[in-house]
Figure 1 (cartoon, rainbow, N blue to C red):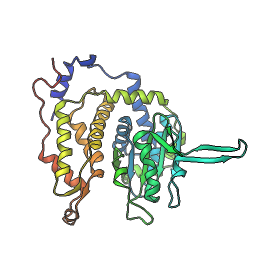
Figure 2: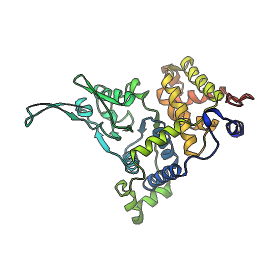
Figure 3: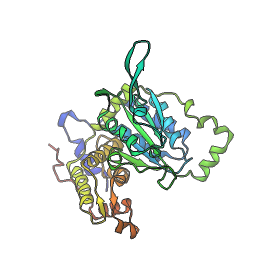
Figure 4: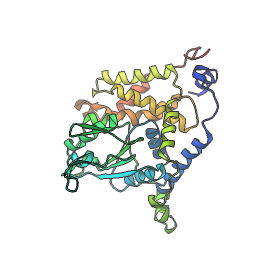
Length: 344
């Protein structure tokens, strides 16, 4: 479907002074420079990098699920470098306790009293490395941080720095020593992405001596400061979504809740995340309005990991992504009505 029906109506919109000029040039240049620098260390994965930035711009968290050694940690370290702000890494292990993540009270001998020791979550960009190698009790320590941007310890709630972004990596569940993530936590990840193996030419380039230096995230310089990223997030959330596209998103999510192949459908949080991810995708493309392709290219990444397939459907070879694809194929994206919902 072409962009014209949505774009033409946006050009005529006067609601809240919305205009069809481009986003601030400096912000767009900074955003493109950030993605270019990340792509310089993770070769041949531009689509994955764009999806990660879409999720983070929309205020979401990202789960990177893939086999070991394909660059999950490298990607997060590179993003943290170009973002600026404070970066911390949590290496999850089977013996880690919740206090190791959120922090807790410790005795200060000099002051003669208990003081709060900050956990590694107190940072702008947090890497939760191999998150599924720690038991569910410790995984659950992240729930409040991911949803409310705060942590509670000893009866006191402390706000996390802004912006706060959690990027988690996990290996497939067939690996030894892994635990499944609770559904409540999966629902708090805006996107689940897979990097995949590099193409042959990219792997050859990685092996060449001339690329060895640029494969180090530490060689990257920050492009922005946290305050600039917060402004970009606000701009991304101001992207216009046509009412017909909102209704379409709600219809698709509702269909997952009634599907005979699914035991668990997508939540209202999933609907909101999907629309926000589409807005951020449009923002990265330099548009002030969402088009159908923005929803299409983010649907699987935002929704599939929240769906639970029934055992009988699994036996028939169906996956969450396949069920979602069938639902979307059965419901074409609607053409906007004449007034466009916002037309004069």
